[in-house]
Length: 102
Image (cartoon, rainbow, N blue to C red):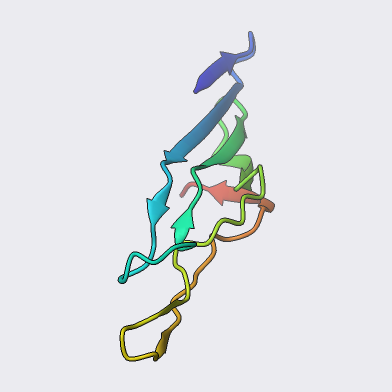
C-alpha cells in the first residue's frame, strides 16, 4: 500500500493484494489429471479523497491477471458415477466506486 498526500491536503491511496495458491488436488478420489496448477491472483485499488471533502473515489481491478484456474475437477467414483464440482474464480473485473460520508 502507498499513500501520497499533496500539499493542499488531498490524499491518494493505492493498494494491491497478491494471493498465491500452491498446486493442489481437487478430487475426492485423487485421480490423475485432477491437480490444479499453482496460481497467483492480483487485486488492486487506487483511491482519491480531496482535503476536507465528504466524498472519495476508488478505482479497482479484481483478478487483474484474469486467472481462470478451476478450484474443482470432474472425477469418476469407484462405482463409475461422475462427480462434477468445478468452479472458477471471477474473471477480471474493473470499476469505480464513489463514497459519500454523512
